Length: 397
Image (cartoon, rainbow, N blue to C red; front, top):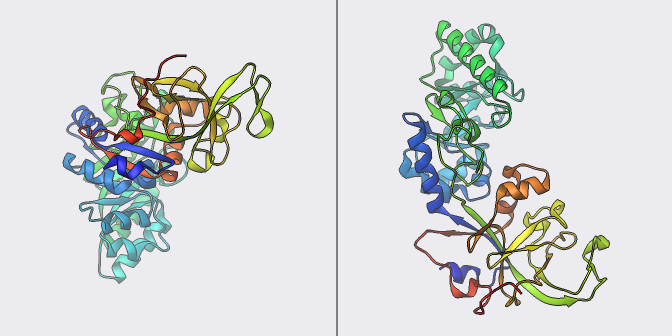
């Protein structure tokens, strides 16, 4: 039970698997007939790749996307079947593992393709290959503008030890620069036509991440690669309304360690960056930057105590934060504070924390998710009483 697992836990991350399923339902309806490649790299952005993959399996994804060979092996070892694509392979070392575990691989460049197909040929196997076209991201892929030059060599190598499954590219600014995004799509389509003329025909094409797929159907092509939308991000960002906002998925919680009253003029936390202007009742909460709660939120963020927004006081420490609970009654040691997610109709969003931290939603989610123990829940489940702040009703003081 959830309560049994968290009764003695100082801080944790609740992952609502049904919310992920609802987000996937919205997405699959919006992009049909395109199919999904859910990105479960970085342990599904910190939410747990195995559990997330199992929750998404009923949606018949074309494949699951991971970054590394190790991530792909972890899914296979856990019993995840079907196609798994390693999007950031090391051609010099990953070939044997890819073949052994039945994993597909991205093609990032000619050198990597040569090594991978040579390994496959030596072992008598064939790799499922996904050819990346660089349309402007600059970090990997074969240049779209030079496709006529490298296409013949790619054709030879694929024939030697692989089978071409998809052709794809990455947008670099799909959430911020519509003109650049459209230009990249044009570059990708140009390269696709040139490759067809050279006899290299991939059955399927894909280019859209979450930001792109919620904006314009032209980006859907044959497949889409959602990640952050599935996990509750990008809310309020869709201008075309192809899909409604995602349901929040993650809720990060921490326990109150102690409650005390500070006199006017008291200093709080390292650097004495906060001085109480009046008498304040504060709570020390068991989460800090070692748990993925960013230090840059010092003196900025708010957290939720039974649905009430309460401000952070002073610097975020390695293991704790201090919050002002002067306006909330019934707060006591062992109670629960929400630092991300919903609580009694109020919410701290990924976007809010990212904006205050000067970063992106991805970093907030992966930081918390990979540092905290996870608790998985379904809508039918209810938190046990020991997770409640107090039996006393919390109200404005």
